[in-house]
Length: 579
Image (cartoon, rainbow, N blue to C red; front, side, top):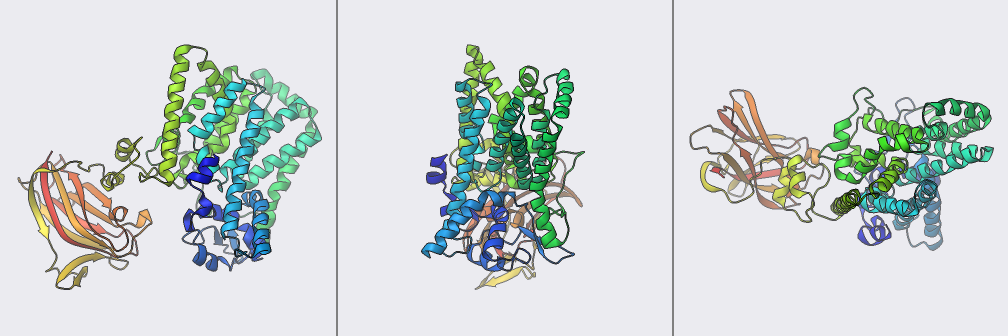
């Protein structure tokens, strides 16, 4: 973890949107500079200068304007800001005392202190998790479990690279809730009850849906049907202590309510606006196995504790609480409509890993009782670890895109350490032909020198076709079906990139569309900005397998997809060829 954080990808040395305090992290953090530096929680008038100087996000997406009050309301709740507060104070004091850096909340000391501070929380979580597990499992099993989590799951990324996100802090809080719950049931006391209320309340303040953590102390001692009756009696016997848990939980979350009342004059504000849950239609397959960012597809190590859940429910101690919290948390995560969680779906389950450590450890001990299951286990652990290291490397430093994959791109790039631009076309078009076309026939060409459409632009003595903010679509040509057309069609053109469009959803699409009359039969497209840099001219092609169904013409076009950047196209050639 130290090597990953300090040597492989120290975010605090990175600029702009790659820095520690960027994207979502800047949203969690924004309370601190707004309150302590700029003293402007309501209007956030400092935002424009920060965006211009540090560019942590493309716009001020961390907050929205509340309609009734006209004030800004932070999208994310304030819990993570409290975790960051000690390290913010350290950085702010250093900037004031030395004058070496601007005391503006975003200069280098703030980036470094927040990143390193969040890493310390991650180490604390592993330390506490070991203490939680040792009463139930062998020391060697627990050691192997910790290695599996750190080397073989996305915990490595979210503890050591993207440590500013909420997940490693929540991981630690769940470990502390488990540890305190065990102590509370061994010796019920007001102190432990207060601690549980504060811990669960704090988890809720970080991420409101993590109020499900309260199920741990509520259901801890249930094993089998008799356990329900015993648990009810235990709660009755210690009702005052459970009331303390509830009151402490509410008082901690009330911090957020006080903030809402201050900035919006309402005790409750749903800050996620149009984002919500589909409780009756959870995104089960998409979240788990989608090629774009499926949790178990890219964090396959976690298949093992999932497999161990049933066995643990039958044989494990305190099994009802563990299985219940795991399932409820999972259901909440997959019901969220933004199921990809910004492209790394598995991150939303990280705080559940301390819960899943119980069935994971039980599976590890069961598998090592026999030689063949032990061998199979260690092969799987090695394979899943390799996959996680591969994913972590390419997520930050490699040239293989490991989020937003397609089926074709995933299976071609899985486990590889280098990729080509041709490979990236598979992110949009699964029919890329790899190899040199044989026996090709030219079926269409156009240099657009005689084009007089609104899309034509004169460059010296030649003309090009362009798309831009005001010219979103350009027709590049139409080719009728004929006997000369073979199995494949390849369209090539020179593309000149004035300014690169970084937003994938706004990248211009070079498309082949096959029609039968007015009926669309097949579409193949690529996003050309994936393959271009600022000011670069490059010849780019798109391939398509000719449809097996009847069609009568293929249309070539370029669509700017709502983007603002100008793209120019020239010297189009279309060939047809066989394998």
